[in-house]
Image (cartoon, rainbow, N blue to C red; front, side, top):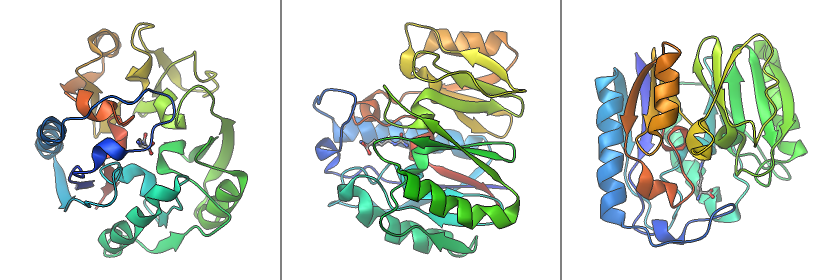
Length: 253
Ligand code: CIR
């Protein structure tokens, strides 16, 4: 059983944080409709979806990935890099407490879940505008007893590490070589179509890779490599600099 924590799009989403893109108006109704389709797809792919209510005062709260990192052994509640997002973690802590022992990062640490990429027993953490060395060091202390190796990688040109690279199968990563070096030894690397730089954020659910319908060329590439793909519209939340992994916390039950 895969559990998926999601949260309804905030009515304040158009006041979201933005780092690498220009602001453009966000239609909350469209964003909510696309998010509903995303949740329906997760259900279809076998997830039990735990959908949290909207947070009217937290514009970015739909992006639940940034507030926690859930491993098989432990969940680490983060301290998000953007101050406006720190209020998001209390409800995630409550939602996760029935499922995992919890640990929590404290100041001066900052870390967004979008910077954490688990590749087998290696956890790559992006050093970014949202994640600092104190965040990585504290995280490492929490996961060391569970036999994970933490490695740091510098992120530039993208908001988060997972804007640039994601795991799409046991042995395969999808990445944008303009934003990240292909240093994932032993893993097959598929690169995004150059006309679709943001396609590197795809969501693996069991044996299926979910790709945004905005990126058909990259989806065709994944298909050609034998991956089973599904697509979903995510264009409205892309205006808030969010992609597919950002909208859920997936973990085994
Ligand atoms: C932010 O800047 O924090 C949000 N507007 C977007 C967060 C997207 N999250 C993610 O990639 N994990």
